[in-house]
Image (cartoon, rainbow, N blue to C red; front, top):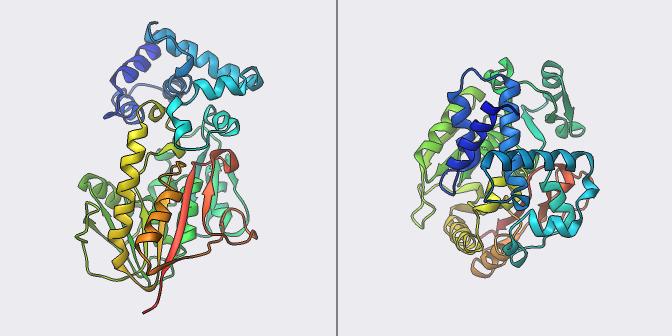
Length: 378
């Protein structure tokens, strides 16, 4: 990297902290540097993410630019000689030591964390092949509905393509897409995306519902809902309404829903491949606090599910407390719900099970945990 790119990388790293995630700082800095070429932007992004992936190998006393160069060298070595890093070395340095107290940490998973993430697109239903032909450099994940999940392997700035501005696709992780498929909403139903964020899953639910019926989308932050509205307008999604909700016992509506999706706030450990900065900001205390919040949200939304309706719980984390622990606690408190056996949409033909769990090394997406319940009639 040249001196200018190194200085920008250092500026981003110095500005990033727990309240200012590195990916958000990176976006703001690159947005302000209008004269950068796409290649320069890619190199700077790669260098910043390499710094956090390989931070466990770096000497904090060294100048930041020197650390960036060393991290880039380690990333290149891992790409060409992965076996030159032992499992023991990776387990000791690639993730914080407290992690093993809250989840299983395996060599296969940690090795995956050290590689750049894949870029997944979600197309409109039935339009995967057509979009792949327009964009080029796309590989469909599978056949049928799975053909609308595309891995993009090219170098275009997808946000500047005509297809993106026409709402023909969304950038959405494959595991996140699987959540919508597990929900399986039908046209004409009424759903609630209770922790909608910026609306990625809301838009997917709408597509699966053929833009028919109604989706309530709530979040605690108005700015995220505003971003969702802009995304929905571009995607030509109209069957939704937004409302602020803080996750508390006072619900934003008395509506009874055919389905409620709780894509709950979580530690995000399943996203550490594409968000390596979070490895060094999340704590064991966060896991404990978030698992309580998740249990509370589930209990609070339970009354909004109509008899026979679905309640879907999803988190992009892999800790025991936030996954199996939350599910068990909810079932102990809410006897009106029974576990639904769910099919894994990414593994067609496999027997339905009590839950779906993905690890990044399986399909190249984020780690994800999904469990579903049905409210008993009566």
